[in-house]
Image (tube, rainbow, N blue to C red; front, side):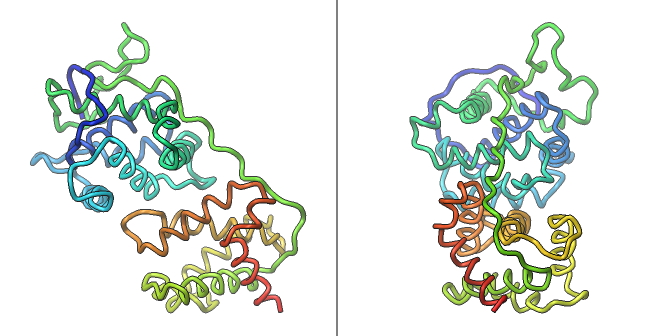
Length: 315
């Protein structure tokens, strides 16, 4: 998207679905041009690519955004509500896993953390400030959106040599990159499981949440994937992940296996409107538990249920 001019708006502004999308596009682009982050660049190739009829070229992106926006509220959004929709979007497309590039992963981490903050806390956060600036840019009545991707025409989004940190006729490049996501705290040496035990513990863990929620998404997954078989694509993925996490050894620490579950949810069951509420809640709780010091992690419900599943399988 290409925009002209800029002015301030207040946080009481209500955003339409389209205004929220354009704001997100500029927000993400500002970090791409500040870092040339590969994952952001790949995603923006779809986010900013428009067809001749003025529709997004990637209809899956358009449909997902509509689902995320509507899940937060069916009415026009506050600035914070639109940010919550952005959280769902990055949860889907920029998961917080080791394979995600540093800037993208850190951006997702920061967006999630900011959504948990009070208003006074988030107002101090550079990522939030940049989001507000993007919204101000888009909602300026003098800004005229042009449905052209900056990736399509040479020079449209190259840095302006006369003014460092700005793209010509564009929302400014992010002045501060997202704070790096922290390392996941590890714990003391814990009991170990083999590949078969780890997968069955994963299944037992999910079965517990299915039993207490009767959730259709978990039920369908378990029906299709509870058995260990080379014909089971999810088991083959788990087997490869186990091999990488264990360093091709036969046994893996149960904390590392727990983090495999967390990564699986980041990829397959992210916290957004494309998934059921029980799955979303579990995904969020796994993510939060992963970043806790181990002394606090072991007190969480998800860790206790994981430990129970492990012991059921071992015994």
